[in-house]
Image (cartoon, rainbow, N blue to C red; front, side, top):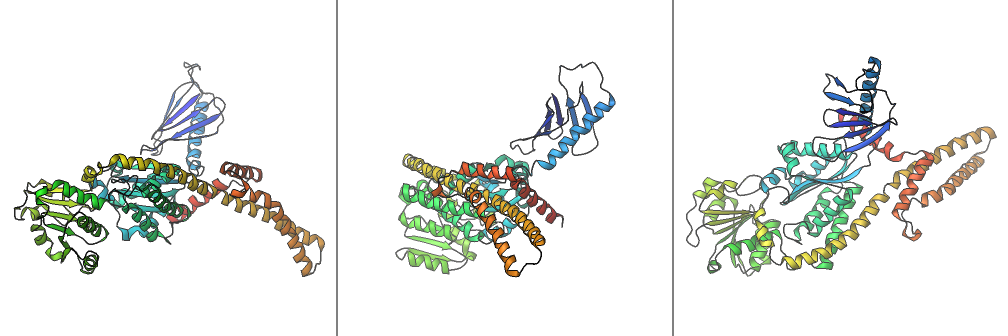
Length: 550
C-alpha cells in the first residue's frame, strides 16, 4: 500500500491492485468525498518527500508498505515515475470529482437555534432584494437553482447544487461577501442539510415545528411570500419551486389536521405576552403603549394587544392609511396615529414600546433614550423589539431606566402549554414524513427525464441515418413514397421505444416502485452508453464557467 498525503488535507491511497483512493477535504469542515480510479502500480521502497514551489500542492509525501526493504534506495527513475504518476492521479481526480457527483438539494443557513440576533441581522436580506439575490446565487459556478427564506428568526438559502462541496463553499463565500461577516464566523453558526434532510427541514419550518413559538402561523405566510416574490425569476426553477410549493401544502395540512396553531402564539403575540408577564398587574389599566410600525408585524401586535384587553394605544407610522385600516378593524379601541417625526416625543411619554419596522438602522439610540424623562408608573421603560435588524440599539439595555427585549428573549413565553404542543408536534411529524416521501419520489422521478430525452435522441439519430441510406439505395422515389417510408421508420422507432419509455415513467397504475424506475434508468444508461448524469453535469458546469470568464 502507498499513501499519498498532500497539503490542504488531501490524501490518496494506492492499493496493491493498482487503484488510487483520494480523500478530498475542504477547509470549511464539511464531509469528505472519496473517489477511486485506475492507477499503474509502481515499485517504491521507502518514504520519499517531494517538495514543489507550486501553491496548489505545497507538500506531497509518499509512504510505502512497511514490508518493503526500507534500507534500500529506489532508482531515481522509479521515484520520478511514482511522483509524476501520483500527482497526475491527483490532478485527474480534481478535474473529475465534481462532474461525477449527483446534483444535490441543499439548505445552508442560520437560525435562532445556531446564531444570536446580532449575527442574523447582519445576514438578513431585504424582501426587495430577493430576485437579485437569486440571480447572484445562480451565477455561481456550481449553483443551478436558488431561493432565500429570510425572517427575524432565520436566514436560509436553498439551492440545487451541481457539486455539494463546491456549492457550499461558493454560497458561504457569497454570504460573507454581501454581509461583511467572515467565512470562519459564518461557519461557526451555520447549519447544512442535504436532499431528504433539507426537504424535511423546510416542511418542518413551514408547519411551524422549527419556530421559536411552536406552531406559529406567520412563518407559513413568509414561505408563501417567497414563492410570490420569486415566481418567474430565473433560478427559481422546477425543483426549488416545487419544494416551496409542496412546503406550503404541508404547512396547511399540518395545521388543519393537528390544530397545532390553536392555543399557540406567534412572535407578535409572544411579544405581547412577554410585556404582560413583566408589567405589574396593578399597572395593566394605566400603562401607556406605543407601537412603532403598522405593517404586518405591527398589525399583529395591535391585534394581540386588543385581545389582551388594551383599549388605547399610540401607533407611529410613516403614513396614516395603514393606521386608518387598523382603526376600521378595531372600532372599539382608541388608536392614535403619530408620524415618524414625533417618534422620540411619543416614546418619551410611553411605558411600553413595541418596535416592528423594516428599518435597517436603529430607531432608538442610547443617548436618545437616556434623555427621556423618568417614569412614574414603573421604574424602567420597556422596549420590546421584534425587528431584524433590530430597531433598538443594543447599548440602550445598559441604561438603568430601560429594559430591552428582542426576539431571542421570547423563549420565556414559549414554555407555557408545552406538553400539548409537543403532542401535536409528534402528530405533525408523521404527516411530514409522509409528505417528504411523496416529494422525494417526485424529485427522484425527474432524474429519468434526461434519460428519456437521451434515449429518444439516440434512437432518432439511428433512424435518420438509416432512413437516408434507404432513400439513397432506392433511387428515384416520389414525395409520397418518401413520406411513407419516413412515417414507417418513425412508427417502428416509436413502437420500440414505447416499452422502455413506459418503464421510466412514474405511473401508479403500473405498480412500479421508484427504486424499480431508477434501476430501469441505470440499466438503459448502461446498455446504450447514455451517461446522462455525468454528461449533463459536465455541460452545466462548463457552461457556467465559460459565462464567468466572459
